[in-house]
Length: 252
Length: 252
Image 1: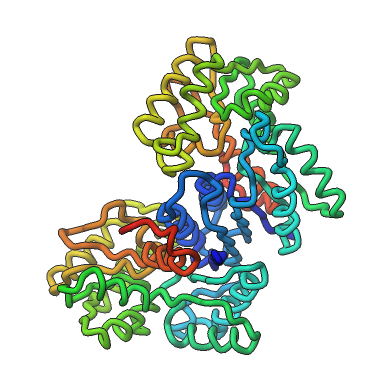
Image 2 (image 1 turned 90 degrees about the horizontal axis):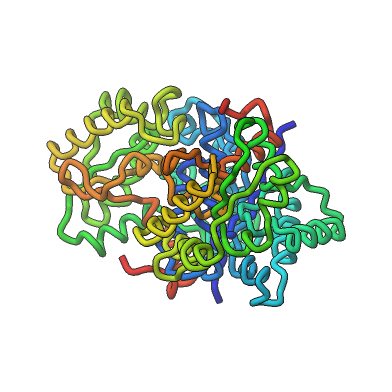
C-alpha cells in the first residue's frame, strides 16, 4: 500500500520547493498519474528561526510549530513526513518535536534527514572518512552533523568560527544577498561559499555536505573545488520515496 | 487579514512545483517568516488526464477529483485556490467543478487562470491583438483560450491541427521525451515546440501564451523567436499573492 508523503515546507520555502522537485524527479514515472501523492504544508510565519533559537536569541522552541504541522500532515493522510531543514534536526529541537508527536498520539513515520545522510555516506562513499560540512551557525554550534557522523566512523570537518559566522551563515541569511531572501545564489553568496569550500578542502575534506537545505540552490553541479557535494535534500527526497513506495524509486 | 493559498498541485506535478516556486519568487520577503502560507495538495493518481476526457478517450470527468482536492484545501484553511492546469479550465471541466464546490457549500475563492491571463494581456500588452497559443490538444479543441480572449478583442492564433497533434501535444505528453515524463525539456521536445513557435510567428502572432503549465519548464527566457512569451503559471502565482495579501506582491 503506497504511503502519502508529507513535507513541512516552509523551512525555508525555497528549500521545501527544492525537496518537492527532487521527489518528483527521483520518482520513476511516465504519466502525471504515476507520481506519488505529496502534501506540502508551508506555513513559515509560525516557525521561528531555528538558528536564533539554538543561539538563545529567541526563547520559543520551533519544535512546537513544527510538530503541529507534522500532525496536520498526518491528519490529512500523510504516512511518512520529512522536514527539509538541517538545523531543525538539532537534538534541542528534534527531541521535543518527537515528544510533542508522541503526546499528540501521532505515529506518522518522521524521517531524520541527518541520519539518512549518514546512512547514504556509509553505503555510497565507503572509502571517504573526512566529511566537510557547510551549514547555518545553528547546525554548526549544535554539532548536528558531527554527532551523527562521528559514531559512524567519519570525521566532520568544519570551517573556523569566524569564517562560519562572517561568510557561510550570511550566504544563507543575509537579507540582501542571502539564499533565503533571494531564492537564488547571488554572486556575493557564491563568493562566500567558495571561501568555505576552499577552506574545507585545505583542511582535508574528501567530500562536502551542503548541510543547510538552502545551499543546494547555489550548486548546479555534483562537485565543487574537485570534491563531491552531498545534498541532504536529495537524500531526504529518495528516503521519502523509499518509504512511500520503493518500487517507484529511480536507481541512483 | 492574510489569506492562505491552496494549490491543486498534481496537474502535473512539475507544473505544480513550478507554481510554488513562482509564488515564493514573486513574494516580497527578507526572511522565511515573511513568506505566505501555501498548502499544496498533489494527488495526481486520482485525476484523470484532462485532454483524454475532453477528447472522449475516458468517460470520467476530472472535475470531481479536482473539486474534492479544492474542498480539502479549503478545509485545511486555504482562502484562495489555484489549479495550475490550463486544460482543467475548459468549461466542460471547470463548470461542473464549480457546481461541485457549490454543492459542497465550499465558498473558497477559486481563481480562473485563463481569465487572469486575459486580464494580464489587457493591462500589460494593450497594443497586441494577435495572440499565439501553444497548448495540449484538449485546450486546443475546447478553445479554452480563444473563447476567453476573443470577447476581450484579441485574436487567438493556433497551429494547424497536424502540427498540434503530431508535435506540440507530444512535446508535453510523449512518455519518452515529453515534459510530463521528464520534468525538463529534452532536445526533441524543444525541437517540436520551436516548430510551433515558428508557425505561430509566420501566422502573425505578436506574443505567445505558453498555454499548458508544463510549457514554461521548457523556456528559461521571456521571449522566443523574437516574440514575448506569456506564462500563465507566473500570472496565476501573482494573482494568488494579490488575493492572499497584495502588500506582499513584488512589482512586475
